[in-house]
Length: 203
Image 1 (spheres, one colour):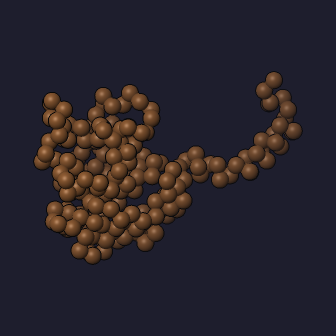
Image 2 (cartoon, one colour):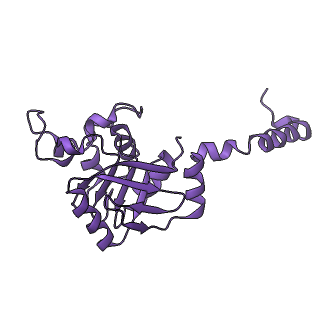
Image 3 (cartoon, helix red, strand yellow):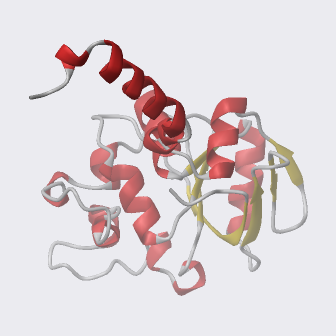
C-alpha cells in the first residue's frame, strides 16, 4: 500500500449527503477483483447519461476539476452496502483523500486498508472548503503528519485520527503489511512448533 504523508492536489466539491457505495461504484463494475480500471466506473450515473456521454455539468467532468486528488463532500459519505471496490474506484480515478462531516463506518474502515485518507471536519469547515473549491484556486494540502487541511486561501483546519491508523497510513501498511512486520517472530514460532510438535506438520 502506498504511504500517505502529505498531499497537495486540486479539490473537487460534491455537495451531496448520503452518497452510497452503489453511487460511488455501481454494481455492474463489481465483477472484477482487480483494483486497476475501476476509475472508469466511479460515480458512473453522475458522470454519464443513458447514452454513455459525459454530463458536462458534473463536477469531475468539468475541466477546472480534472486531476482532482481530493473530494470534499457531504454527510454520511460511503453509506449503503459494504464494497471495497468503492475506495478502489476513488483511488484508481486519482482521488487519495475524501473530506466530509462524517462517513459510514464500513467505508471509513475500508479506506484505511487501501490507502485512501478519510478526513472528518466540522460542518462549517467543510462548507468553507466547498465555497473555496468553487472559486478559481482549487489547490489544497492534506497533511497527515500534522493532521491538517490547508484550504486554497490558506485557512488551516485540524482533524483528529486514531493514532494507530495514522501510523499505518504514514508507513503504507495494510493488515497484511502490518502482519509481515512480525515475519521473523512468526518464523521463529513456527520453527518451535515444528520441533516441539512434529505431528502437527503436514505429511
